[in-house]
Amino acid sequence: MSDKQSQAGIDEEQDINLLELVLVVVQRKMFIVKICSVALIASVLYSLTLPDIYSATAKVLPPQKESAGGGLSALLGQAGGLAGLAAGSLGAGGDLYVGILKSRSVADAVIQRLNLTSVYKASSLEAVRGSLDGAVKVQAGKDGIISITAEDKDPKLCALLANTFVDELGRTTIRLNLSKAGTERLFLEKRLDLVKKDLKVAEDDLKSFAQRNKVVQVDSQARASIEAIAHLKAELAGKEIQLAVLLSNQTEQSPEVQTVRAGIVRLKGELGSLAGNSGAGEGIPSVGNVPGVGLEYSRKLRDLKTQEAVFEQLTKQYEMAKLSEAKDSSSFQVLDDAVVPVKKNRPMRSMIVILATVLGFFVSIFLVFVQEYSAGMFEQNRLILAKIKKGLRLFK
Image (cartoon, rainbow, N blue to C red; front, side, top):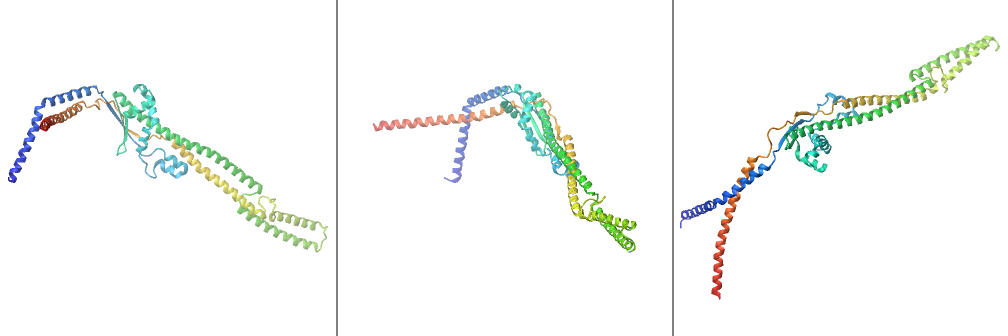
């Protein structure tokens, strides 16, 4: 037999097999129609029992990051320290706001405001949270916009749910931001009070030291002390020369000699007060006291300057904290409010009926071939059984 004849036989056998399959379907067409009819009727009845579910969506835009060096952030950055922390409130991306919307505190606030315990007829708060979590979906798109979609049998309730979540998001962000800014302001306020007291102590200490040591300006006063000593020494030398001249022709009892000697004693006393370690000089410290007085004065002045610098820095930070607290922290924008839907979102009854009918058709086709195969197997098994019985009779 040639190859062409063999191929023709195979094609003929395939055609016959295909025709046999079609014949099986045609012979059992009523069974297929019944299955499809049952699937059609059942799907129609099932779809009619499903309640209409409506959907409403609200969209919000999280705050965008401010450009570097602009606005309040730049001003707070110049203050540094805790004031810089005040600038970094809730200005993060959409993930933060999605997390807030999915938080238990926001869910509980919505449940309480809308009295969802009676709406969902739940026996516990956990059950209400579960129903609410299934009814409201929150997601952030690639464009950064956050969508809050609520579903319910009541179209008004689903719109109210979405808008209430947006409202609670605003309240929560304001509360968190103001709480953070308020905490920083209170901390700075307490710290500022302490620094004020320290500054007053430093000022009083420097003032007392300056009054006690007759200090106004250490460098200039030291120069004045040296010049005064030189002047006194020159005057003393002149008085001593004058005394020697008077003693050459007068006695000690001479009024002029006593006057000059009294002047010498006075000059030596003044010179001793300036050159000695006592602080008896009028208006200027003694030369012996200048190094110690200058060092102590410098230390006290340094403490005062330090306290003044701390006070100035804290004052700036305190003003920035008050500004941050007064600022409206909820800076996200509501792009779309949820509106009451007119058309239902689901169920798609026609699609349910079509899919159920198509599924019933394929199931009926499968059952038809299973029945046909079972019938063929039964006939073949009957013939095999007859042969077995015949063989047993011959054996007997």
